[in-house]
Amino acid sequence: MKRAIRYLRFSQLGQSNGSIERQELYTDQYLQYNNIQLVDSFIDRGKSAKTFDRPDFIKLQAFIAKHYKSVDYLLVDQLDRFSRDAGEAMSLVKQFQKKYSIQIISVTEGIVFDYDTPGSFFRAGLQLLLAEEDNINRSIKVRGGLYTARAKEGRFLTREKPFGYSKVGEGKQRHLEVNEIEAKIVKTIYDMYLRDVPLYKIKEIAYQSGFDRKGNMAIDRVLANPVYAGLVRVEPFKDLPGGLFPAIHEPIVDKTTWTMVQSKMKKVDKVKVVIDDEIPLRGVVKCHCGTPLTGAPSRGKSGKYFYYYKCKHSKHNNISAIKAHEQFLNVCDLMSVPERQIKEIRDGSYSSIEQEVKANKKKVADKKHELEEVQQLLNAVEEKWFRDEINKDTYERWYSTYSDHILTITAAIERLSPNQGKAFEILDRNLDLLGDIKHVYTRSDTLQKREFVKMVFNGNLYYQEGIYRTPTILDIFSHNASKMEEKGCLIYQKKRDNLKIIPHSGR
Image 1 (cartoon, rainbow, N blue to C red):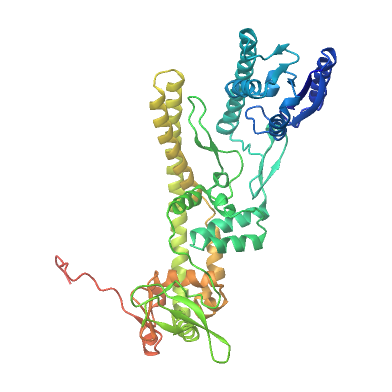
Image 2: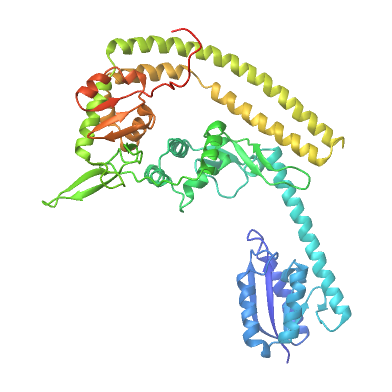
């Protein structure tokens, strides 16, 4: 009696198991009618026929390699259950026959694949080619539908929802909706990255806040994902261009912020900064040689640890962190702004904000007018393309140019449109803090302290011979520069003008 094994498969887990039951019924009938003994069955549920990388098909190959002497046939319902890749399938079935003397039988198509029989070889090859053609047609329809849904309708179709959003609705009405709690974390991630917070620290803070995506690149993926700027990335399809297209969901960050982050991510950050609350000035204060100071604890005779700021060059700075911090707090105390000057700032700021609000309204109106003009140009290019008045290369070039221009203008409108009334609220709530800079610095966390130092001294704070030195300091904080030097805290020595340049006339 001849012996056989069989292979059954269906593509989608959403399909009914009736597909497998039907295949079992037909193959059982064939076995019974032809008096063939079934040795074993291999079933792949929800697996595509595009490749042979399927769990039970791999087991099938291993079984044949081990027991081929006791097997005569491999039964399938139809050859497309076996594979939809004609080339690979033909090669594999030939191998089964030539190497293992096992023939493939397609039950419902009535084909016994025999490499040595021309008619059989032709029929099997034809069936496999028809299956592959059907697969290609399906793929084209699916890809065309995906392109339309993404590029034309602005829909987000990825199975897993991005962090910061929820999926709502069903079918074509299914869309992304902002999850306010998660969106706040996403905004924090973008904000910290633009403030030069190290990635490991961003990850630490994000997970503490409720970020639940796993993997070393989870934060990088959030920063690189255009979905957060209200965009969807689309692959080219036939003659239609790919790229970033406006989406229907609400953005979490504005396009300007997202674009700035992408530019920053392209730059290689060679310096790895480790944040330590005991030495917040590490990396932001420099030695007189220009090298950023490192910091580390040193164990004393009593066994207690003391922190120091050090230069990597020997015989340069090696400063007690306690001394360095006390000196800097004295600098902060002397930077505090007098009440009279705070009042002048408040009055001047109110006037400036009002002027800026008026100017921004005019800019927004101008940008909207410019946006309409560019959109009309883009529509004209599309019409010419539809009428075959321009070739594909010309269309893609102008489409890309106008699309980028529209993206830039839209980002500018978003940046200029926010309610400027919030600026007055922030001003009233925080301006009085300028009267006690020491308190502001002390209450700040380590990241805020580092950002404060960079901003106030423009990244030019040095330490030499027991005292801080700087050529740059924000004007508002420089009013007590002489007292700072008298108390041995900070020497403020402005950058000298270029004396080689001779003025044309005047004082």
